[in-house]
Amino acid sequence: METTLRRTRTAMISALPKAGRTTVWLLKIIIPISLAVSILQYTGVIEVIARYLSPVFSVIGLPGEAAIVFITSIMLSLYAPIAIIATLPLDPRDVIILAVMCLIAHNMIVETAVQSKTGSRYITMFLLRIISAFVAAFFLNLLLPQTVETSQIAADTQVYQSFADMLLAWLISSFWLIVKILLIVTGLMLLQNILKEFKILDVISRTLAPLMSLMGLPRNCSFLWFVAHILGLTYGSAVMIAEVESGELSREDANLLNHHIAVNHSTLEDTLLFAAIGVPLLWMIVPRFVLAIVIVWFVRLVHRLKLKPELKTNKS
Image (cartoon, one colour):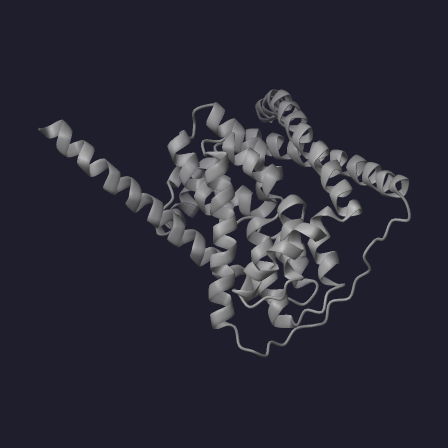
């Protein structure tokens, strides 16, 4: 018993510095971006940009107003686009398509920065998520029945009377965001170190290994895949960065995992947010899961085709 407590204490102490560094790094990105986006929303800049993009959304069967929701989701978490949806004249079919697009591309500026720190190019992940969102929307527009049953969305959007009111609201939300990130990142790092110390990570990896093989992912990334699906990229970043920096996961394997979780992550919390306003779960989960698998196998195929000429050259 004493040995177990000592090992647990050692694992927890060693996790704290890594948790602190990751928290500071995340906040350096998140806080300025959230302030900039709040100002852009208050001044109406985002709405102007969305108006020019409306013809693009007509191609995937969505009205021009959908552009406002999508652009907002790129810059912020899903709470903001859900609030905007409530004010727009969208039918249930439109909301399902938009939900999948937002689930793929939400909070992308911050989350892509996380992925760039774990073996992937920023621009590659950014474009992958944008393109994947529109590909998913295109096929959903073809597959979805014209009449979809779902509950109506009802929510109140926040209208600020002055710039000072907007700034105060941002300060309050930022404070709670800092607290949330600090607690979740620290807790996750503590959990990871304890699981690693007692070899529980090995059990998780072995259990999920068959699923990893099916999806074309390395078996040693099963725990990171699990974390990304439960907590998402932002809160799971501490574990991902630590695994790559420690050398336990190669940058090549991390890059392959990033191609999957760029499209399909935070299956628990983010999906339930849209489910709470009546969007059917299957229409949100299945398209992202299938698309992520297709992308990973396509990337593996491309890598294999690139290696063949190199192998022939080396043999000759």
